[in-house]
Image (tube, rainbow, N blue to C red; front, side, top):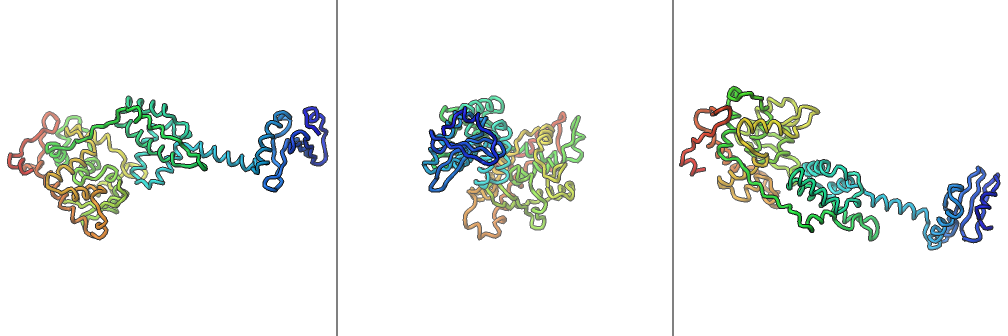
Length: 429
């Protein structure tokens, strides 16, 4: 029979399943079930096996619409392709091509085996600057989107922030370009971040070279060592012990911010005067010698932090301190010393160089990858190799603040510069 709309309208209820096959389009048919459902179907052999697939229900589909939908399905079946399997494959392909930026970022971080600190920094950057893109298909992020976001970030947060954010995004985009969804089909055909380079947007960042000089070191130390320091400062609001200890620990050891904040008491060995940094930037444990003053700092901090597992505990949840920014700003105000936490690391490196540390020992002290070789695996006491570097740096600092009085000098509520170093001492330093 020829299946027409008139024929469909003439169908009567049936007590069993009945098939009505069309004589115009071979393989096109109507299934009339005992339950009253009327369905358009296609039938054909696929690779020698009979297959029956649903086209759609009547009256949701008209006869004309059903024929148009059935024809390509039959073409696939005659070519040996099951429309159901092809539909599932297409659905999976569409799902893969719709992979979100959030998902790709997660896969990228796992594949690269990044340090926890790097993962945290990347994730914070994406959440801060690309939050509206995170659940968007990565394929939908265009070159124009990236260009506009770079300009917006540069204007609102500065060129350094914009450059760093786009650098992180570009790395994830490059990873996505290598992700093959199916044979010859890749998640991305190009990196939209390339537009920043191709249009020659200025991303150059002046290398930061800030470090603390002798007056800065002395002022920090005087602030720390002066009893009842608040008596010298009008409207004084206390700087907590954790903050000043953290700042001086970075100054005397050159460790990175997050390495210091996450330091655990279980990794502090007072007997052997060392502490161990875990999950460092270069993915190795870093053993740091504790010079006398550092030991004293941590012993006093142990009294303050109580029974917690972290040297610098947060107020809640048993976690470590995350960002003592407000306390550090207060410390800067009272001492007159302006610095970033990375300036403390540069200060350590600068003074180690002044004291004569060679490049290899300095790299080891700062836990740079370049400071290690395969032979380090056989040097069980390598911490003893770098201990003199830390001792020499501590000695350099000692020259700055030791004037025989043990008292801080204040003027108008601010730490005064004490030009007490004689020429011979300047030459020696």
